[in-house]
Image (cartoon, rainbow, N blue to C red; front, top):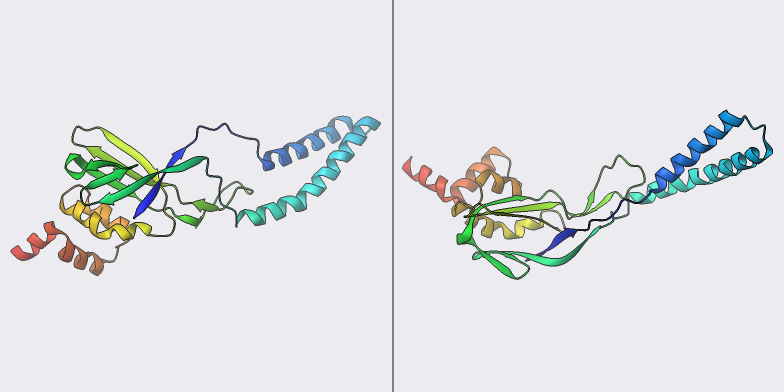
Length: 207
């Protein structure tokens, strides 16, 4: 199964809706305190800002509600591919042979549609699933660090037997493997290790 690699853009920060909203309120309060509504022109500006703020309040509430159903902006592209195979890891059709790899580390907590708890009220609350990490350390101690997308929760579990083989070749730590496959109960861990992992099969047979 192929996964899409995420390449982030180096984009400039844009002024957000909530910043404009807060600045409008600050200007309004500042004008009220400094000029105390004595100047007619200032009165007009203050009144206009007041109307804008009053209109922005219901709009901000609606916008915030819709943020729970919106996907965050991608700010990157998904044009390249990632595949796991017994022969190695294939990145954009280039095979990195398993024999050339010293260590594999994978973190797969993210998936498309995952709810995000943002501090910023108006920011989209659904993830694009692009925060999953893969780090490959090669035999010459160089490394490659990439991010990839999961389209649904635990999509990586489709690679279970390939990842087990990586572990048996001592390319991936068994604790990392258990974390990827979400195996965390004592009995499940014991059964899994004795059934699939060679290092623990040997220990079991010796006992």
